[in-house]
View 1 (tube, rainbow, N blue to C red):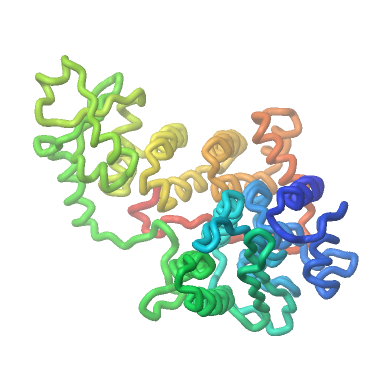
View 2 (tube, rainbow, N blue to C red):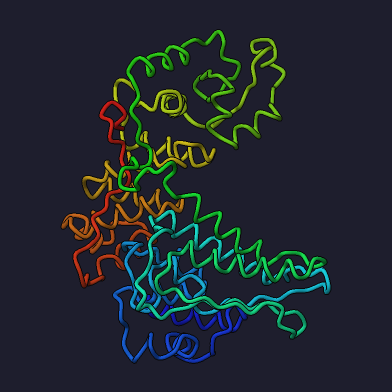
Length: 424
């Protein structure tokens, strides 16, 4: 990881993403920007590279590394991981005086920064967490046009939450933008976009964060489940056909479109073959290559959240995941399949199958669950040593098994379905 960090951050310097000093040692470069109070020749945190990558806005390194850490753990200089984003200094370029616009490169930087905030929030980072006043870190924002400085703002992180920090930036930028009525409010809009992301995850109506139910958890009366099951079985009112090679599966289009934006788009342009017209005059037809068993299991999960009465095998659940991922539906977005598959990792074979699926579909939570199991299971380690995994899975396992933990690992589970009748 250290070689990846060094190569990646030095590349970030050459691309002009952040105005830190270019040097052989990436951490030394950040020391020049942030001062010697942060770095005095040794790393101060077990995940020092993560805070450095966040400070430089290195979305690629953070997403590829995706460490199994507590995302509210504090760094003595930066504060929390949310405070660290952009702490290496954010330098953007404007074009089109006097009605400025961000340059193409600056738009890419902004996109990466917003993606980092979203990534940290998905990992559980708390935007309302205030870091200690002793934290000396700061974030500096500079925007130039043809060498002329248009914005130069700096805020310290000590004693502030991430929300308070970016609110201060937003307010100062608004004052500058209001003083130039013919200038587009680019800076304040940028800061407001960050605030919008941070505010979105706050508990609403005074509910305490600790009392919020885990993702994909709900208390549903049995009568409600039975109602949805009867609705699914009422094929006379179903106006949509999912045509599989081994048979048809019917469902209500309003349910399908509510579950998946991809299906919504597909149903706006229904494809019908001439031989389908006579049998399905009033139904929208979607032709699939998936087995009927897979589509029926997916349909039941969409309607009720329950597996088939006979249960569902891990292999079938992986096929449902493939369909769900292709359609980008709420089973995937709400973590239901991630939680179900994480529980299926019980031996070396299931670990390999689920890990391959997580890597192919870029599902970091599921990948982390597999790697955590591998660290504690000798059979998985022996199979890895004998080359029994795919190339990418073997590389990921090698990196995970080579780690030497410096502290007790974070055992936070993947969000699970806590209601027994909804357990896949």
